[in-house]
Image 1 (cartoon, rainbow, N blue to C red):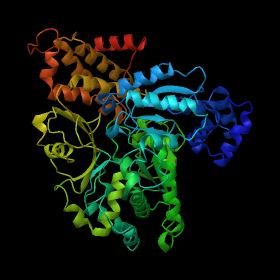
Image 2 (tube, rainbow, N blue to C red):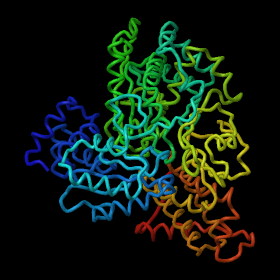
Image 3 (cartoon, helix red, strand yellow):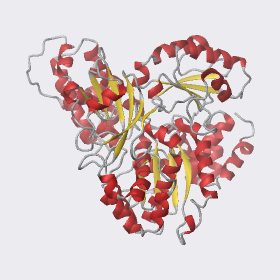
Image 4 (cartoon, rainbow, N blue to C red):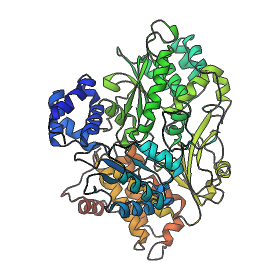
Amino acid sequence: MSANLQEAIGPVCESFGHDRTRLLDILLAVQQRLGGIDDRAIDAVAAELAIPRVDVAGVVSFYTFLAPKTRGQLVIRLCNDLPDLMMGAEEVAAGLEAELGIRFGETTPDGRFTLEWASCIGMSDQAPAALFGDVVVPRLTPGTARRLVAELRQQPPGADLHRLLVRAYGDGANAHDLVRAAVENNLRQAGEVIFAQAEPDAGLSKALAMSPAEVIREVKTARLRGRGGAGFPTGMKWEFVRAADGPQRYLICNADEGEPGTFKDRVILTERPDLLFEGMTIAGYAIGAEHGILYLRGEYAYLRAYLEHVLARRREKGLLGKSVLGKPGFNFDIRIQMGAGAYICGEETALISSCEGLRGDPKNRPPFPAQRGYLGHPTSVNNVETLCCVPRIIQRGSGWFASIGSRRSTGTKCLSISGDCTRRGVYELPLGTTLRDVLARCGGEDAVAVQVGGPSGRLVGPEAFDREICFDDLATGGSLVVFGPGRDPLWVASQYMAFFIHESCGYCTPCRVGNVLLKERVDRILAGRGEPEDLDYLRALATTVKTASRCGLGQTSPNPVLSVLDNFRPACEARLKEPFEGRQTGFDIAAKLAEAQRLTGRKSVHFDA
């Protein structure tokens, strides 16, 4: 850590105008300079910004990418989400440990390397994958991992990792020289909306010739629903924001896709950044906002230089800034807010907190963001894919968009497909496409199960393969993970529960403790020690966690367990050490609380409303 903290920290704070709401940006920059953020650095930042020390310490302790202690000069984060484990992440981990002589969570004695796990880095289509600093390294094997580390050891500190990786992997398939990464986009099928060829910014030009109310009406008529998973009508959300009281309004684009198996936004950001920024500008015009924020997950830091370049080019063309495209009175610009490794920030109120320089804790609702969001102002939070649909709707008309898909689910859906299939990648398909059709396209015909919608979605078996991918049947934010013969549904549930345990913010007891109890009981059954009563226990506890949790994470985290109980019950019963006779047993809440006390070490456990 630098001896003169003031010299290191003062200029960083100055570069952000000593703005307390930019605390996350400040801490990321400080860490880049100092290698970590220890107690003295926390004190110095708090003093420089004139804010309580606890505010700074709280942010440092919340985000995975912020370190309260000095890490190695290069942090290697190997992804251990389910698709990566299926493709051999544990073998790659063993290779890294053998080459470096350390375990995960440790730093080499010379301070050069730190090994850590990462919950999801958005590379499930080319797993196993890791982050070497902010450089993405996909398609790893134990051998390539060891060779890369061995070569890095021969390089001086601060060597150009991108150049090294390009030499090892090639350039990949990227849209711009600034995206220096070995990442392949794996766009397997372009559809009629997002990845179709179209005249640049034709939608924006047409929108600015309309009134904001007309733009909103067109989006409502198209029946565009949010593509992030919830499916809320986009035009209705914009109408609420525009009608809300307040001198300012804000637009936030949620590019924090953090669910294992989800990576379609990564491909959109690389292939169609101008379309996204055009959609954000139209949305800003519609709701009456002058400021837009793209919240970019920390794992996609390798895309930032490219996206900043696109924004700068749009400003030069008059597509952002004062009087956009010569429209008097319409001023709109976009800044990029980097995340720092927190899945919970995909929830819109937690994302707003993060943009404000706070811990990414979800907020109580009401008020809703449309009433009081970013900095207390009315705010619309929209998904990347949602915003990319908007220019196409304005350009070609709501009737054209509504003619694609099914009656109640219009348009296309971008699907991130990974797991046991031969053609992993992104597919843009009309909503209403059957799951069986999707499996045929991606080479997953022999699937025994598919996780639809990421960990918070549902695991379905072959009896559901003729169901449709749409909001009113198999709804998904975009993730499909395919499981082939030999995959154990209970193991799938256990791995997803481990993810939720790691990513819970810990605010409320049902989520913080309940998920631990759910995984413990699933693992007991996996180990062959399960009893018939355990299935009733799991269902009752899962229902309690869903009902009593404060935010969407806890309200959906039991879904892997419930899906297995609903759709793969024979597999669960076959694992029990005693034959299941179909008897019904009661569920003792006192026993659950006693077990929670044992696992958490707390003398008392209560459920927060």
